[in-house]
Length: 201
Image (cartoon, rainbow, N blue to C red; front, side, top):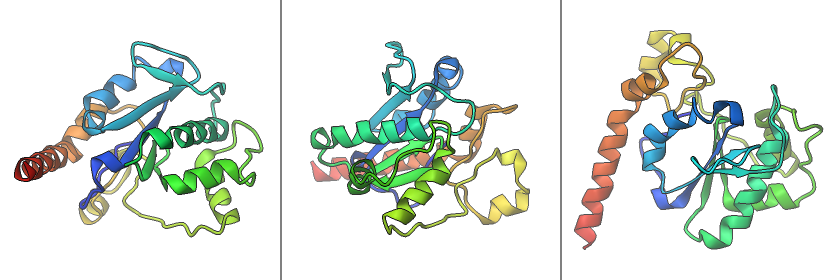
């Protein structure tokens, strides 16, 4: 999942939690690190395995083939425990599921008792929607978060809906997708941040 927007929140206010698993450490994490992750100030890579070469954070939940509810809630619990050490962080992006939550909401999700996964393999993005509804939190849908690859959409659709993310690395060059759709925006955004930092000095 690649995440960007036209009017970004300050980088220091976003924590990126990247869901991964052992079988993808060598294949997918280098792609993430060589593309959008290099612009993230706060980022954690979450897995069922500890891997010091990345490094990953072992959340203690086995990987499942379908649905990742258990892993996602374990990640949110870990992020909530970090909140005191990251006072500027106001947003959490769980990459892989296109889920953006505020940190206060993360604490409510973790502590409420209303968000217990029926099983560790429950589809996490759908179950988070259920949890948010239980908590009375409105959900906003954006057509800019894409759950598939660029080739899975009509070109006319993508030219009228600036994408915020794409999902899946299957049968594509994910670095090429990043380069074609998001790299230039990242470079411009980074230059803009640098320009503002130099003006503040």
